[in-house]
Image (cartoon, rainbow, N blue to C red; front, side):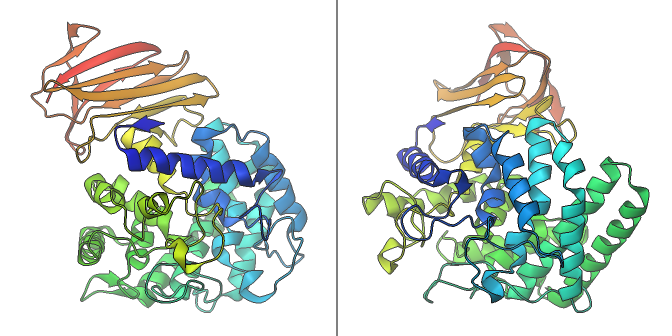
Length: 438
């Protein structure tokens, strides 16, 4: 990945240096102090990791470690392999344990291989059942929450957002994914059971955490409002109002985030997937804390444990790297299609944000290299794409409906996506240069 924004290029380096420092058989949090395989990092940074590295051996090995570490009662511990038992929330936190349910799905989406869903379905099911034993009226109240969230408080347990909101949302997500796996694997009874469970958790979550008058969740923090949008827990008629609450809080904080280790992905992707890439750009295009730019200005070459490294702890910590997903999926626009896993069909839908003049990325898919490279030049948006053999792509162009579009030098009529308000092309394998007037 590379682009015209120096902060983003250096952030990409920070993240990859931290990945390489911690990618030693087990994905560790830091290479100098704990060297422990805290699970949440793998799923929260999953797409960014998979765009950069081939994890076709790593994820199956991790799932086997998870299976081996799962306790009799179904608990998946926060650290796998469990070299240290810290006890309490540091052993049992839903945002960490649910990695055992999320990873087989990510593997399927990126590699088109359902074998982990088949093999570890009992592990996934047993973990969701375990969370059920910890729930009261479908509300789970233990765990670390949005660990190391940002504010004037000392970093640690979630302070900006209710821990029960975080734990229950991940219980819901686990149940939803187990139901989805049951359907894929043709397990009708399990599907009915977990689909009903997911629906009941959703109802309980909304009853407990949603304020119908103010249209906000929990404490109205960025995490509180982002996670129900990302996970589709919010009722459709309230989604836009909750989104506006989220945007208002970001604006009030001077376009700065307040999320931590868990909340970053939900915040970033809620913005990216709901047409708020300009907000994402403003949130990260600066050299202040909290932000990647501050770590760069501070002279660091790896990610830090805290958004503000002056506040201490590790200076080479792999947990805040969730923006990598945005670089590949939104700036360069390479997006998987969950309906046709393994990038059999995918999207290229780059975003022109801020004053950026170019972005490019490539991904080595199971079918071959996918590449997307765009530049803004002389009143034109020029996109060059490489589509592997045996795949198809839907390209969504970030230009107006009446834009003149040429492909490989010839005028080309496109379709139009009303929802996205973007011209659309459907293409097979090949290398294409698409020119559009802006």
